[in-house]
Structures are given as structure tokens and as C-alpha cells.
Image (cartoon, rainbow, N blue to C red; front, top):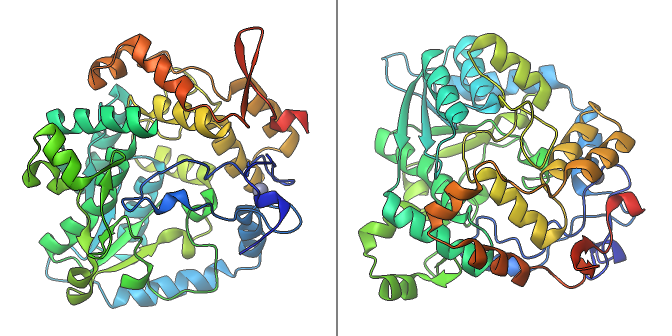
Length: 406
Ligand SMILES: [Zn+2]
């Protein structure tokens, strides 16, 4: 798309408006079951501005009242009056899923079912917030994957990809599709600001409801492609670790044909409502008993209301930091700069202060969960440090180029 120096992954660049790094997609097989993640993706335009910042510029021109009207029209086609669920809202009971479900119910008189793929290891606050979401007036289907299989896959993903979050990410991606099919719910509405984070669609003009064409490869099964999990081909995993088809079934995507035949539709609330993480946080606090991180902030960042439910979360962000040089504070600062909650200068200082902070709080639990020794852990971490990102300085690993060096 953009063949410019900013997208050359051997040279580290940061967005001139926010603090995003062009390393974002470097070796981060986030949710991809086909290993397509190995292809680098363009993130910056020719002026050195990231596409998410450009997306925000476009957002300012949107008539959000008209958008809400559009949403109302779409929902009219799905609303059921016979007491059956008419919309599915996947989520964890975080601020975005709380906002979306209550908004659909109170503003548009929809009857949402909510569904949750359980985190690897619930945090106390995550469990409380899930319960608060349910208490605020929603039925919920909680799916908890077989811990024996899930912890093995977490371990393999850590060792093979330095991505302990992959089994969770993959499982929770296709899970809502399976619930929608099973419960005969034709509409799935996501509440998170994926596009705001630079991983959703960047075209705000396309307001068509997303059908099968927009469903990502990792949510569905393309029969022509080999499927990988934890960096291993499916058949290899089964053979090597004596796993059965039923062990791996929860991680398998739904095939596109089935979704098409059943006319499952997907939309993102952020196409219709101007997304702002702080606004959703205040909304969730007012409308439910949503609580923030009791430690005041999450490790590796300065925020207290983002991604609170999994003990592995901190480790996930830390591994991402190792592979890309951009951590959890970068992730949060980018979105807050774009929403004009903080300035770029503030963002740079926050990144300098918090990015890459080691996730001590649940470290022992994570090691135990993955059945990995501390020695093996650090050996694996160092194995994945890209040479163009890291150097050793007096026996300490430091970033070769950071946003505060610019
Ligand atoms: Zn940017």
C-alpha cells in the first residue's frame, strides 16, 4: 500500500502525531491461524503519520447523529419482540462491552445476549467486573476452555512465538460466531475500538453491515489454507502432544460457508458511535459496578481501566514489548493522544516511564500456569529480541531507538 521509508521495518520510526511505532506488526502473530502475519503490513503514510491517526482525522468529519440514525435503521431489521435474543455482544465485562450492551438495550430496545471466553487465569477484578456486567441486566454465556489443553497451548505459544496470549486471542475470536450459530442470533456487535487501535478497518465511509467478506481469516476457516496454532501446524500439534480433534475444537474457526448460509452479520459499534475510551469508562462506572485496577494502574502502563481481566495480560504486553520495542504504555498513550486526553509530549514521557515494566505481580502464577522454569522463561525472552531493536549496554538490554530519542 505505502512503499515508503516509514514502513521499512529495518528502520524504526514513530508516528509524528502519536507515539505508534512502525514495528507494531513486526513478528506479532496476534490472532492469525494461517501464518499470514509474516507479511509486513503498511502502517504509515508518506508523511510519517500512522493510519490510526489518519482514521481519527476522518472521524472528526463524521456526523455521528446521522450515524446513530443509521444504526437504528439496521437494528430495526433484527429486533425480536418474542423474548428471543436478537443481538450478541461478546466481551469480558470491560468498559467497552458494558457500554455497547447497555446502549443497545436502553437506547434501541434490543435484547442482547452477552458471551465471554474466559481468560487463562481470571484476576479478582476481572471476575468482579464480569459479575457486575451480568448484574447490570444481561444473560451471559461464559465458556471456559479445558485448562489442561489451554495451559499447554499457552506454553507452546510462549516458547514458539513468544506469544502466550495467542490461544486466548484465537479462541475468543471465533467463539462468538459459534454462539451466534447455536443460539440463532443473526447480529453480533463488537464494542471495542479495534480501528482506534489500528487493527480494524480504516475506511469509515463503508457503512455497510459487515457480512462474510469482512470476517477475518482468523475468525473463519479457509479450507485451502493450513491452520497453525502456537506456531505449529494443527496435525503436528495433535501428533506431538497427543491432542484430539475435540481438544482443539474450541480454537478452530468457523467456516465461512456456514456463516454465509446462516446469514450471520457483524458490526462494530465504533462505526456508529464516536468511540472514546474515557467516555466508555465513565459510562461503565455510572451504569454498572465496574471497578478499575485496585493497584491504581496496570503494570507496564499508566492506565487503570484497560484489559484487567487476565493475569496473563501483563505478560502478553511484555512479550510484545520484547518483540517490537513498543509496550502497553505505548498502546494506551496512542489511543489517548488520538482522543485528545493527553498530549504527544505527555505520551512520550509516559512511554519512557512505564513501557516495558516487568509484570511482577502475576509472574509466578504465569510460570506455574505454563509449567516453565524462570530460567527457561528468560532464555526464551532473550531469544526473541530482534537485533535491530535491542542492544546490550553494560550487560543490560536497552532499546536502540525509542520514541523519546526522537
Ligand atoms: Zn499516529
